[in-house]
Image (cartoon, rainbow, N blue to C red; front, side, top):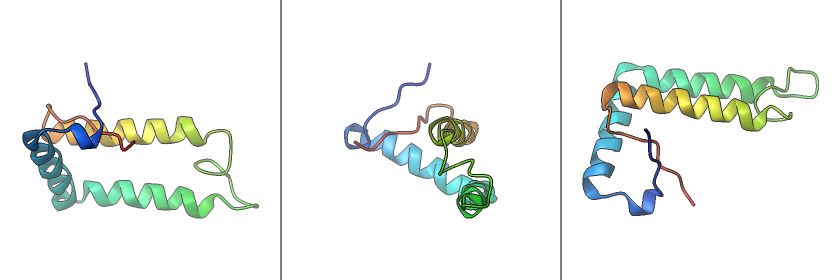
Length: 87
């Protein structure tokens, strides 16, 4: 079971593992794929676009899925990593 913690309460080891996993995704190009996907949905969410990711009722479920996919990618690098939240 994944337990998400406030980023302010992460231990030094949890922060180190999280950052290392993000950096590994960045090195492999997988992080950039997430950025490209997110940006693609921002750019298409116009008055004449699909309005899938940001300007519609699908905002919350779309981002929930997006963050779950990102967390799974982090966990493929280090299974102990959970995506922290910022409060």
